[in-house]
Length: 232
Image (cartoon, rainbow, N blue to C red; front, side):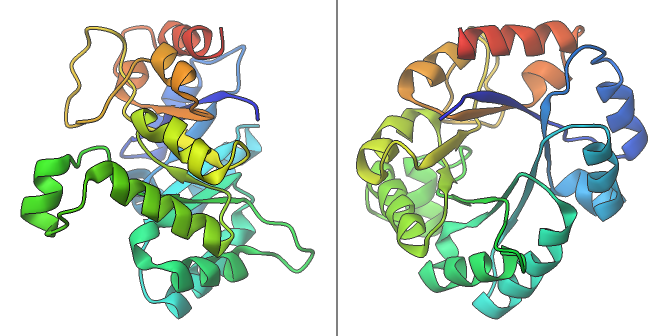
């Protein structure tokens, strides 16, 4: 399983996004399109970025009844993205329906991964706000196992959980890990964070990096630093 750095393009408009991507004259980074950008610009932004030669992780975190998710995934399957995701909390039947919707007539589909617990959630929040009293690590592992049972390709999890996910679900089960910060950087609203190098050691297949790159005075240099630390 290869390793790659995915830049979270959490921008409010296509203009801002293209201005950022235009700074990369030598690389074509793997990019994440999240809810903010997708809701602002719609499917056109996906097609435009794809036409520029970028791989795309479409991060919309679908979570609804199985039939609704199946139909939504059928629409997304036409956008030619590389990774889609949903919330594992929707259950096994919802995840199975998502695969059915995402799979094209020729049998091809993007990778489909499930969000276990957001990296902004810690044990205290999970217990007090979500009324889930099991240990956070146990919840993440159960959600990962549910995703594998449903036939998904992997999960979104914290780098701190990547090794355990691979031990439980296999080395080919993909781990996509946000919550990445350079050493000594502010963790912002993330609770479960690591550096790129630590994520590599812990077994992450892909790291998703936003503000440490996009808010940097030199995003290209920050991206290259991420790549070096994560792949090196």
